[in-house]
Length: 341
Image 1: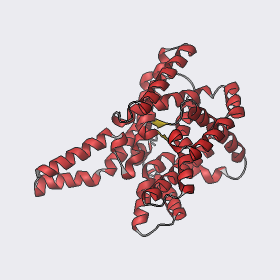
Image 2 (image 1 turned 60 degrees about the horizontal axis):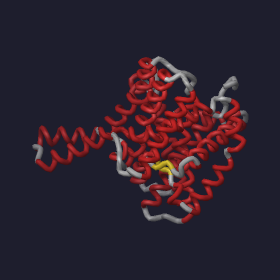
Image 3 (image 1 turned 135 degrees about the horizontal axis):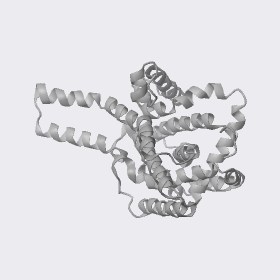
């Protein structure tokens, strides 16, 4: 990649994490019975691109094969250590209740069953966690996608064989969508089949010639899939957590085109006054992903129902928690995946 610096990335991360927050608010509104036409269309449009974008971006930022062991531990500390720290934090109430029932009250058979099911679901992850934890599928899926791609880059030097392998994984992902929709694996490992080809495409986009072609022609599949999402929603639904990746080829090309277009737009905006306001959002993006739904639920419990206000509270409340955790070495390592100060 000939670019001296990768422009637009921080701003694009900020925009896409804001779309994650807004998409969940729209989903919450629809579950509450407010399912007007515009809300449903906007919700589907956001889901077409926001999670594929992050996998493509991760591949775009991956430069070359790294030593397998050191890359594993680096990404483990960055993604999986915070994953388990947040999982523990979210389950403190359940753990306390389990201890109280076990030591003080006495554990009845139905309580054993409840806690066994609860903790097994929490450890399984993926589609078995709900509510404020629905986004917990993403960090482990991204981690294992990164590790598998790095393993392939270390073991296969031929670009042709790598492309064939990615095609095979791509077909497995869509076979899961169409033939085995109920099949899941712990930690959303089944979604790696849908995420790895996106990661690979992001890595290909580091090539300037490929990047320019995607930028030039990418608007065509984007417009087409936006129209189809409005006219034929059942065909085009993208919900990666559930192993649903949209229309083969078309949805993938649209995700690729949206990525290059958003990155190009953000590169222009970064040179103006927008970037300084978005840097805190981009820097706290993973914390926002983990905590925004909990913040929104707490705000709703206090009587906040305005959509815009919930959006602002969910976003900036999460950023506040991020900076609070960044003040100490222990919390920044455990919850933010940052290096020890």
